[in-house]
Image (tube, rainbow, N blue to C red; front, top):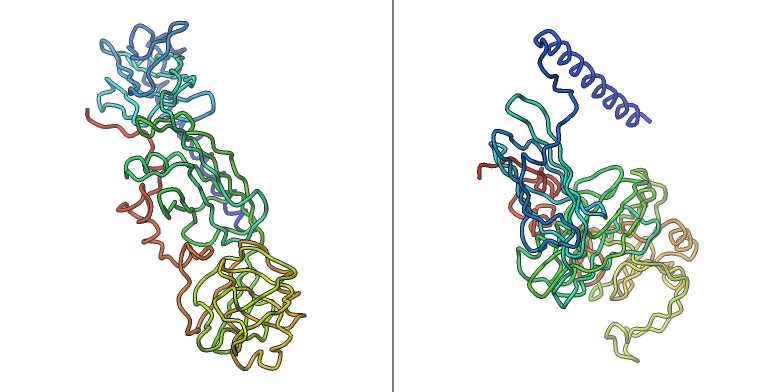
Length: 424
């Protein structure tokens, strides 16, 4: 509530400040002007004051591989250019410091329709406007780079990463930057985040900290039709929308044999547990819940334990919450109740009573966090055994981005893409 009030107050203050500024400027203009044309006068048609390098005639189409250029003629200068295709994708560009020329800095899409709005200013300060439309030719590349986002649409915990699986490998750094810039993630409330190239065909996206509670996250690809290489253009990508619930973090302490479950920062339950015994120690680190299975048959042979040996097992397990692909769960272990809270006797899973396992199973969801501390086990790996993304320090995570590596922590990809005046 208090956050909302502060936000609304700040916004209202901004609006009032802008209104006062406009009023003050208007008063100044009235006092200083006589019968000269006001800056608020109707803009003139600037068609004969600008030149444009794309064909606008019927049936004529532009080459999407060539940059878009708009130039001013005579004494006029360009003050703003907005180029957007029919799907709402903007074209970034650079404007010369003297306003003489604007050119695109991001590639155009093939087989697309563009609308370009140009604002100019005459020698006397009078504003000019011109709207131009053009189409681009069909793609010639034979391969398409399709994108599949994950997870599925739904509600998740605050630790859920976003994944992007590519249909073709992308290895070149410049091509990776182009792809990454076209994969758009928007969240409400807004948070800083970055993509990380796991390999040539997969990226993961996460914020600096966990997602906010009750957030809405929307993901889309703006790659369709965009040239990536001579033989590869952007293909399809179905948009994704997920939401987050309350923040649920379960901290498993292997030394004290207990788990504390936090909801939005407050402890809601403390559970006696057992974790991995010597030789089978539970992995340390932050893990993201991958799924829940009411019943799982667990056998030692699936993790390399020979049948018939002293460590072999074949057990029916209930209320199993998975945290790694290799078979680490939080689950009911009625056979070890006597050791729970006192000793570590499992083969790597976190065991608890059936009642506590049922409560845990019903409390958590995919994307919630299970963090193991004080275990003698190995560290949770980032990508090959579930979602260990949160074990990567933020600075190293940013280094895995083709856009963010080597940039200040305060800089975001959307800031880098804005139109910036430059001397050409």
